[in-house]
Amino acid sequence: MKSMSCTVLATAVAFVTMSIGISPAAHAEAPMGLALAQQQNCMSCHSVSRPFMGPALHDVAAKYAGREDAAIYLKHKILDGSTGVWGPVPMPANTQLTPDQAAALAGWVLTLK
Image: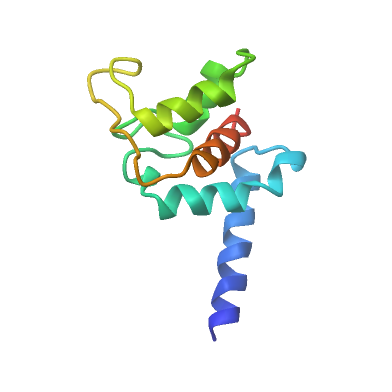
């Protein structure tokens, strides 16, 4: 039963990531990035495709797509938090994340452009 539900979940995640326009090269990383974002409660304030409490992750990817240091910049924003960049609602520091997890999340977000 558990393996069947994991298969169903993986299929659903693959469908969602393809339907929101993630490139085939990034598709392999997408389920892990989305799962990590869900596990670490990123999706409590963010959505992939629409603004919620925070900006849509698709919009974050588009905004920083031209920056050479985008992955490092976003990694630090994820770890340290941010205020005033996307409006009045601050993003708290995510002290529960390791630097590697923050880097993985930043890399995944940048695939969403």
